[in-house]
Image (cartoon, rainbow, N blue to C red; front, top):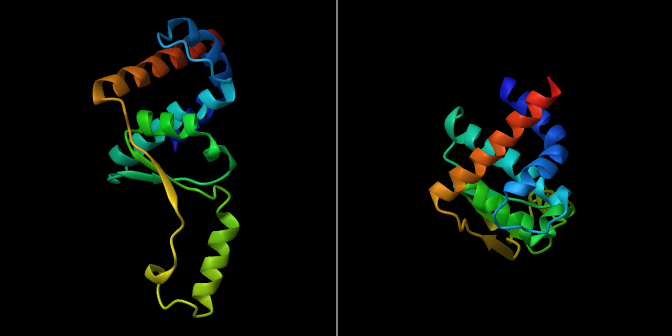
Length: 150
């Protein structure tokens, strides 16, 4: 898929994007570049799911080590325009496998009976105009990097 190839190119260029786009950032956040990189690209993927695939994405469930960072999750909610739900135990992969195994051996009769973990939620705080502007800044920065690499 051409769009996914573009996403990978954007992520490769994102270190440059952090350096080049910082002077125009009005909020002057001090955040390490690795925490700034994935959110705009993820927001683009969410838009692809909503548009091209027609998936009505309202909520994003996340887990894994990086999701322990509240800034990362809030930015994902803001740029993706979706509610982000994170289990309090962010390393949920092993737990999920164990629960599915329990379902497989008959501990529960259906997935609805499996106990759900406690979660934290991150709601979007940007209005649609602010979100669109942030994503437009990201796209302009990507275009600058791509034109420098041509």
